[in-house]
Image (spheres, rainbow over the protein chains, first blue to last red):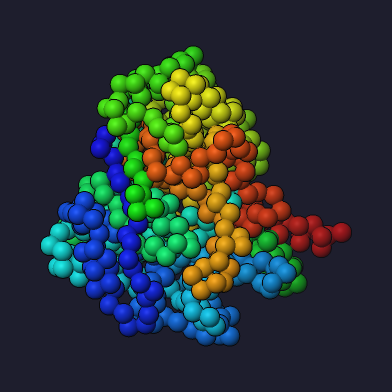
Length: 260
Length: 260
């Protein structure tokens, strides 16, 4: 534990285009890295989901952005009007609650926007298998994306895809130093790893891949269930609707009820 | 950037008791660390807020836990009944929205619970000044605590106190590699640093302090406004009430309105 972890951004990933082979691009960058930065057993690669979207051709014309958000939406959570239009915070088809359903218009070619990968956990598995075979080591792979949070300013990165990483550390039943059960039950390890990686990648620096070394205890032999298991929506979701929307729903239903 | 960051847990912090001098305890542990782990200019210390609470004597008898939560509460956001009672998710006096107002019953002496520090930003400043003077280097200090998030399973660490760290990286106006403004406007750097530190501290291992090296660009000369600036409540808060609570409010108000 006192060895801790090292996190660095991989240099030499070119601009990714539709159809590119990410295993080859990331693999070549790993080959070109200084010897001490070549992949080792237990390393975790954190890949900005944007380059996966680009490689997979998940590109839409900017003029179709609003329709793309609608298409990616399973359920509207809240909407907010502002000078530039209306922001929709929605649950998307991946179960992620995000502004604009995660449709992204930064770092994309002029006139286009990017959708999230079709199946980020599958993309993470494919990257993992390809890179493990290419480099002969056991790796974890996390696909990250950036999102806001209720009650906090600023955005953080979270894990939207994962392979070979235990995304939750289950502490239920673990005893603290006083012999009592821990109040914290599950640490969202994959989200914390995505956040750590963002600190070295930055947003504008063209460094879409980070390597995390020292967390091999979270790297698993199997691919595991992926980041989808971090989603908590459905009956357990106490914030399934924005406050204003839920209030309006209650008002409307009471009025309809009174009229019966 | 390719040097990246290193994060490790500091060994040798004893069980902290009310009245303890944290500068002396952390300072002694830093003195005893291997030479390459002694503090350098630009290092950030991430301190679990729990040991600050203990040093500050923020201890309450467990029998008074429910009253303590009430006392720490500014506003109830949502409540949930379960087998063990009722969990209250509230905005506490620090502006943090947390289950049980952040009152903690893990890793505390039998029969007691811990309140959050009275003023975590002030505690971070005091630690920073003491350690900077003791070690002759410029440091950042973050006080971290663990909390759940809407829509995601598991807990992550966030920054509840900060001194000498630019808690938000303002990217508004920054251009992406295509010359367009970034969609992400502000990175919650302090929260991401707290999350990174949690990965090496763990919950039960008795390692309440981590050191982050390599993010000196976020360490400021002044103490800065602290982690309180990361709080987003008030008119901007789209989730000021849980969905069920907001719905019930709307129903009740419509009914009262109809009766007028």
